[in-house]
Amino acid sequence: MRYDVNILWIDDSPNWQKEQQSLFELVIEEYGLLYHIEYTSEGDSIIHTLSNESAGFKLFDLIFVDYNISSSLLGNHIIDMLRNNDIDADILFYSAQPTNDLKKILFESNGSFEGIYIANRDNFQDKAVALYKKNTRNLLSLSNIRGFLADKTSENDYVVNSYILRYFGTLSDEAKNRIRDYIKSSVEDEKVKQDSKRIAYNKIMENPEMSVKKLLDLPAYIITLETKYKIFEMILNEQGNCLFHDHSISDYLEKIVKKRNTVAHKKLDICKQHQFIKHSDNITQYESNICPNDCSQHTDDRKISLTNWLEIVKLTNEYSKLFDQLSSELSNSKLLPMS
Image 1 (cartoon, one colour):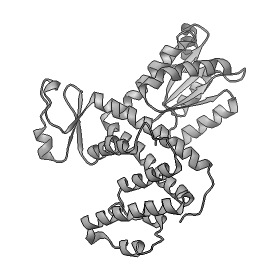
Image 2 (spheres, helix red, strand yellow; image 1 turned 180 degrees about the vertical axis):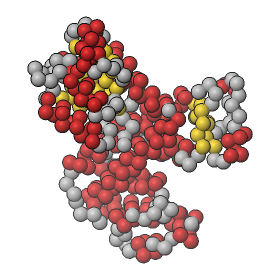
Image 3 (tube, one colour; image 1 turned 180 degrees about the horizontal axis):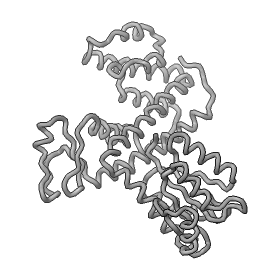
Image 4 (cartoon, one colour; image 1 turned 135 degrees about the vertical axis):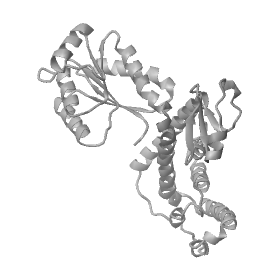
């Protein structure tokens, strides 16, 4: 599950909705988080989407519902349907009518305001942005810190593997050989470090036309993640692809992947003033990592500040947008023979 904010927007005025969505996106872009907005005005489509939501995995975090959808389907009926099917996403219920009118309609229909927020079209933007910010606060929850980095970087690893498989065969023989030479050197270095674990190594490496596909299938202790990303970067350079010109692969590995490894398999805790995430490898470290009364006196390096974490979140999502572009390219390209 991606740590994005997914929004279902139900409205029967496409021109107004499009204008409001542009304004909404302009404001929330500054948070650096990824989001997806699905717009619909069709009653059958709404019912189908919501029935899937109630029967399976949760997709939508927020739902914006206009009151006047059609003559046969009103916004309060949709809210009834949502709550009757145990769909607990936050809802913004709005209309051109005064908010007190909407409250009365909602109370008579649903009898509860739990998780439902009211707006009119004049203050829609303020309420929508506030609700978005409320949901993005989940990324500052201790339980989500580890999962956020693992989720994002795992999908990026998938894109890198796929890109290598799809495009290595399109390179010139000279470029292929340069990459093969790099792989051999990299794997040789790793072989020296962990020679006892190299069972599959000799058979693959003896072949002058070494199969990159087979190599990618080797365990991480033979071909490291860093090596795969370097192969990926070499293919991009051979293609003249400048997508990562402003956000380098080396920075991604250093600033994000290393941070993922920092919080993986560790005890996480938040300091008393909620300004630092503390991480410990063992109980000795945990017990010695005493939180001072003044956050400025934190001297242990086993910590991540709130400011640093927000920067990591923003940078991670910037990279995810780039990897998503490549993922879309992969989906639309033709499969070529792998060599």
